[in-house]
Length: 75
Length: 385
Image (tube, rainbow over all chains, first blue to last red; front, side, top):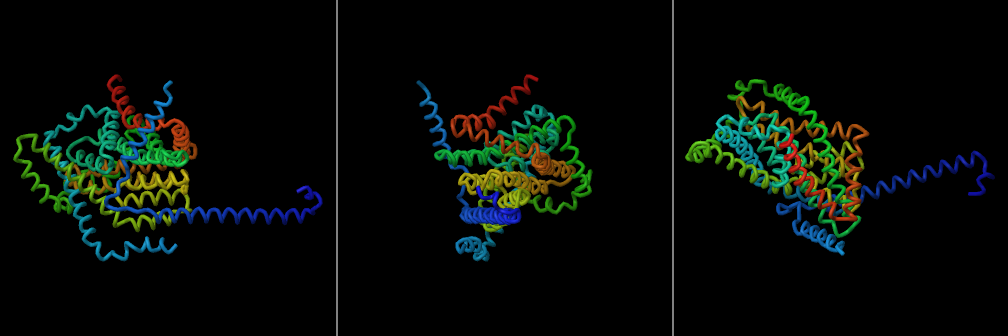
């Protein structure tokens, strides 16, 4: 980047335009990849009549971990 | 993307065999409407037209709020609680007493997705994302109550606006409508049949039995409608979600409202979003509008329940259902619409998730605090002041 001072104003503007264009393309590519991942995740949603949001076994594990955390703090 | 396309097409491919399930949904909606009508009649009979005196303990708005929070958190279905409230208003419970209960049910319903987020506790990053996605809903609903409950106490904002709207829709004196109430004429045979059975009990017991039967039927109807709609509407719900991806917050709110209307349960839709956020594929900012939409979508059930009520109280029943809708719409307009309030739920949720990840006890304190300790403190404060 030290040779920037040797470049003409026109050349610097051209580099800047190209870089901005590249950043725009990278952002678009990242957005597209994020959207693809989100579409795939939405497709993976499965709902059956038996589906229930709360898994009480996992809630029990959480409170067990809380108790373990509290016990480990005691001297 | 082949598997994606297949997943979306699968429900359509067998749509021909889904008529029995759709008929069952219609039957369950009929049961729901009948049950609300039963609660209205039973409540009126049980209280002897003295509902206001009987519920004088809930005339303190904080007590009403607590009733709404605790009842919804225990049943884990705001649709059931709001339908019950519509029935009670039809039975003579004053709208002013019922409004804080409706606000409370909004807060109580968030317990479900917060419980879901606890399942991600084993992975720190995943837990931070899932817990913040769940509690952003808690924070939003608590801020909504903090804004609108004082406004209600001071000015009766929701009561006045909903009364005006209900009058506009059904008329101030709906006696003139009673003969034309098509839904009421459909539900009358069912309600009369139950009434003839519960009527064998003496005095107020008959009304109480009618309320209890109505409550059980509401719970059964909403539970089984939800089960059926999960299967019938999953394809449509996915289509809506797909169409909202990458389209900004307004599309997020609209998709949350639509998907919740499709499956008739905000707990289902918000709980589905928590793992999506936990995986890191959806950011908290992308999930947040969807949660707000779910608040709006869930109000359809109370509006549906209000169609059960005819006669002089039809306007009041519709009014309380409209309160539920307007409270959630106003909350979105004010909190999400005003830039200085918009990020408050996100900041609160991120702050809480950061400390809960380091010390899980804070997540437990939040759960117990919001849904148990805070309600008890409100009751204690209301008794002192």
